[in-house]
Image: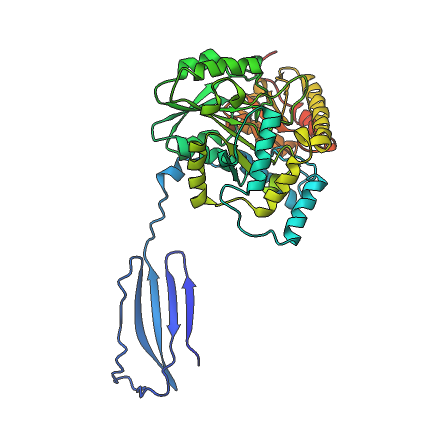
Length: 479
């Protein structure tokens, strides 16, 4: 018989039984009264107590080790407890689970283009693998891709950087997190216009900073009012986060408005600006994109975040970057070096190819943008036909943020009361089998977000389902 260990678990106890065969070379007596020197022993461990006892089973004696687990401290860090999970991710996961279970859910919750990554980018990734380009790269990214990013920012955005002022990361979200953590201290305030990308407030909390939310109005296309901004700034204001084109509203900040904001920022020496420009090339004329760092006096205090996920349909490649003054970028690099280290070597080769497609992504991107615009126009027209629904027409990105608050307060037979954006989304998922994101995740409970990154066929089917599901509802607020 060989030595063996068996682990048995119940709801309250974990027991391990260790059967030890006595070697034949040891003169161990099998008689009950013999003293073999194997008595009961205990190990003074924090959460486990071990004891052994002899069991006589001819022709061999075995020793059983019983392990009993005491209560384990399962408390978590207060910082983790203060962070909310991403609602967009949660809804996307729920919708995926329903689809896998056979429920024909149409998923319009996630911001993921339905297009394939353009072929030249894919080929560059394949070649990188085949040529053995599968090793670690420098933490900040290869010199090749940082030079390509510098060229892009100069030609397309009118901003001058050197490679040591660029940090390549595993997606734009990581770039944003590291920027917030690098510049904010406990007690600092992070100014965030609402509606906002779901992760911005949580990024502030991760840095022990306080998110200060500035509401905007659908009647003003969800754009930040400079006067409202000025009224909220204090000596603790450290960072203003701007996203243009905006997730979730699709709003685009015109240059004139950004100039007004920059004049206010200039009055506050501690105030920096984090500008999230991940959707810059998904924009619909006549709207145009302006990088905040290109404005007079703003280069020194702006951290520009961008990436490849949206423009180039590269969500799974996980590639983004941060550009800014070397002092701040180096600090972000220090965090990254202890966090993930550099981005994928394969993705970086693909990123170089993406930036080589031409101005604003060339023809491959223009085809995608044309399709997004067609989908946007269809949604705006379709929902514009519903009474009591308010719409701000998106000028960029691929989201429609619609005010459905006139339906709140409605009792639905077999479902219950629709009290807010979350219950409305649950109702539409249950009755219409369409996955959307409630506006409370973005700081505006009156709206829900519809992503039109899906195919036009799916979008058309989703609209029909939503309209059908809304028919039985009695609007609580008369139009």
